[in-house]
Amino acid sequence: MEVDSQLYSTRQGNFYISEKPQVMIMAMLILQSYEKAKEKLSEDVKKKNVVIKDFGEFEANGKKILFKKGEMKEKGQNMLVELYAVESTKENTIFITGVYLPKDKLRFANTIKKAASTAKLE
Image (cartoon, rainbow, N blue to C red; front, side, top):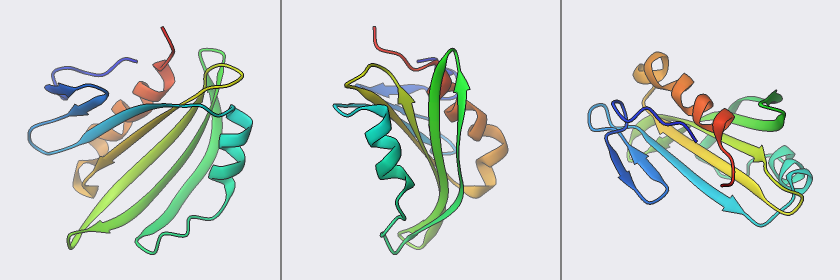
């Protein structure tokens, strides 16, 4: 997974964090097929504090990638959330989540999509 180390200067395991503004990318391997992950992500979000703004699928590097983008309110502050499910193996899916402030969208949204587009098991 390609993550810009100049923007995300802190790495803690599978978390990548920028200093200012504070933005986070988290990667997780889920023991679930891509089709099962797609089915679950296609369901409506039941959390009260998340409003889905965009949902879809694309291909990158020969892999299917499902995405869900939304807004949430955390501690009185609006945040944008991006979730990507990346096809990995028959039994595994890589999930990439990014969280940032709306004012930082232009600077950071493409870095989260790039991380998802380049994610793979090694």
